[in-house]
Length: 234
Length: 234
DNA sequence: ACGCCAAAATCCGTATACCGTTTATGCAGG
DNA sequence: CCTGCATAAACGGTATACGGATTTTGGCGT
Image (cartoon, rainbow over all chains, first blue to last red; front, top):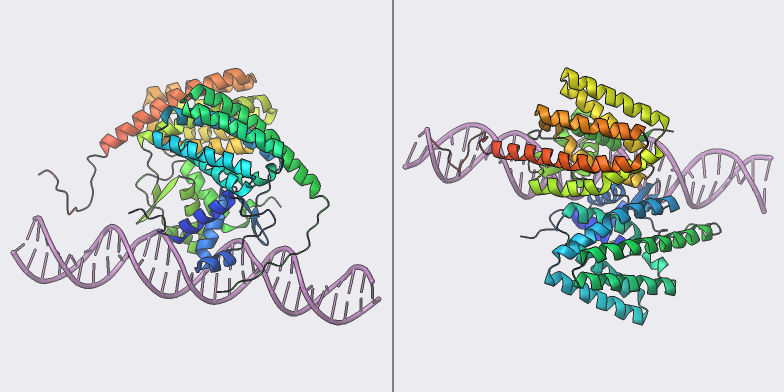
């Protein structure tokens, strides 16, 4: 009865969004409907509609040459974090209030994997576990409108998060914050959750601003020549 | 090149959303792509994409027989107002802080028209002026992500607002709340704005819940066309 | 060598056509 | 009259095709 694969647009959209969440798409990549359509063995229409939806949601921008990751300006980052500060502490507090044992187990599992990945220095695993952690507590939020909106604002940053993790100190600080939040979730303490989350938001904003600023100054020099992507037919 | 009307999808989308904002679409209406395409003299594709975007944003739902207004459940209303309480007081406070003379003039003009319409009992004019008032202060919000998100949550209710206005007492109360908010905008008082807006949100939630509940009980009886399974009382 | 311009390629936007599913309609049997 | 069933209509989903704008490519003139 569970039919997420009912229509092609939904399938492709979900797949693409997952790729964005996992930073599988780099800022220099161009997503072209024909290429995606070919990869799924369908026509342009479903691929295009999925892309347009991602554009409407603000994840992508349409260019004259394919769709690309939206590049956040410093102002965007500040504005988006103003929203996150407004929403996430409240959402997390609600989640703590409505937490169930299964979700707590998911959270703990994800947290364990995050710390293991930190020890191993495996960024890819760390990011996946991080997404799991995030999705787990969002699932405890009863208010779906709230959970979806929060998820959307988080996703804007998911696609660049790897970069901010290149700084080891920042990464350590990030995991510490997460660990504290996890403990408060386990303790079912909505007030402290809201508090920790608020502090976490400010730290995260600084981290992303720093990362983005570095990217911007670096890209002053790099004027990319055209790169050929290998073609694959089917 | 200030032409957002470059492509057809954008044009049709904007037009349809305006119609939704102005309650030009009733819950029993069915929006069909071919019909819309015909009205604009274009093919199905742009009409369909505009409709799908409205579905993705939650304004419409796709049925097997055309697209229809999304019907908010009582839980939806409660959840959406939880979001509005979280966002609108802050957004309005920001607007008060960043208010410019032109926007204040727009606000005052809209407020004047609202009160005139109230005196005339002209609901249509009142609703239009109400949308203008709302858009005016949203334009003062520098954080576009915030303004857009707030607008989206407001729009869910714009399409049913006329109903809540059938109760004269509620209407009067509504305008009083708006008038107080307008005064605080003119006074550039972010703190009071946030306060008034919060109170206003609670009142509005009660009003919409009451309206929706009445709608739901009323629709128990309305059953057109011939049925097969379910028998009507003799 | 260098730039300028035209031809080619790429890719978005839009149009048209087909198909499958769901709903309505009409007809025959009780 | 009601019920069941077959047939038609409506509509969403998808495929394919065309056009136009923009970028790339390649060669020609200076």
